[in-house]
Length: 262
Image (tube, rainbow, N blue to C red; front, top):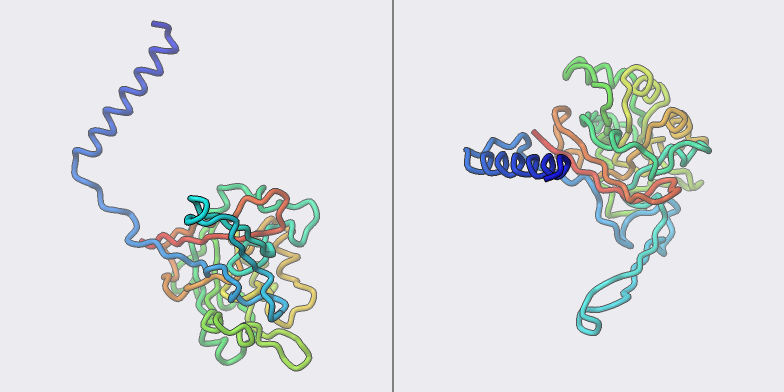
């Protein structure tokens, strides 16, 4: 028997032995007690940025089980629709497109900042550096490589496009977001890899020049927008898995966000 063949066979035998040992011994306790889906279902009912009555999302049947023996559809939607990811290339030419974001940056510690009470006082509230300081005083320093999400309570408006966009008579949108100071602190002092929020944008509604988008994109930080059910996740201790569609050259795209809760 050639040496290479022997090594492969030996390695396989060891792997099979260890597999058998693991499954005959007492099952270890799971590290996570539950997995939470932080993703809105994509449909024509999802609010869109423009507020158009006709949804930019469409789905049509290509085949049916009764007729063809299998079921398939053709779908069409913008890259930035429903729960989605903004790749850095969304605002910076030459930055990572969605397929280029390193996979090591798509999983990490989940930090949830709750500013719901402040948003009730002002729908245009912007998360501040002081909010982050208060969170760290209660929970400890945000770890490097974290993905930070802001719970604003805005997802309660998800089923009403009018309320979710919250446009005024002049057409300006009104909903909460991050302040530039908060984003800068999280990127430069805490080395976060992603920012998320339960609104249409990480920039607050009235923003016209999208300062948070420009700054974070220039630093290789992606965004998760229209995140769902953040109220179900503890402030700290969870791991988040971000699974975007791997669209070649994409400025963003649909994403499934899963929180592994200890």
